[in-house]
View 1 (cartoon, helix red, strand yellow):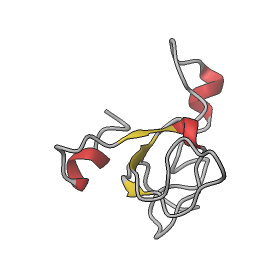
View 2 (spheres, rainbow, N blue to C red):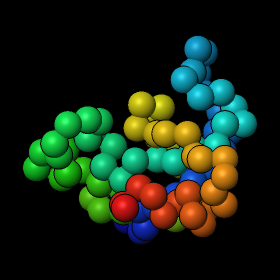
View 3 (cartoon, rainbow, N blue to C red):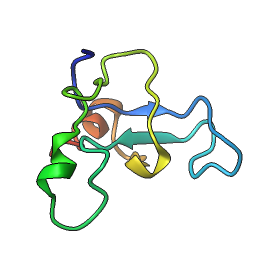
View 4 (tube, one colour):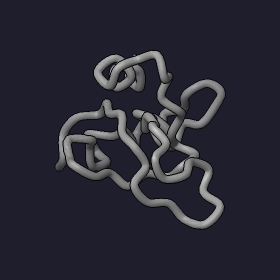
Length: 85
């Protein structure tokens, strides 16, 4: 298991027509299956850092719709603290 659940990073590879092009600074969602509305038990069952692999790595592969743009006015430490908050 790769630990940790918060992160911020820069897209280094993306498919054709990607939502976030290479070079975009993004934050992955703590619960990638929870996209909107009230959280469900099913959506909260799959979270980064357990049971899904976490963020403590040099590279992380995530779906674009499970990310948001990192606010430009925040440093990496500040932006990385947002997913669980």
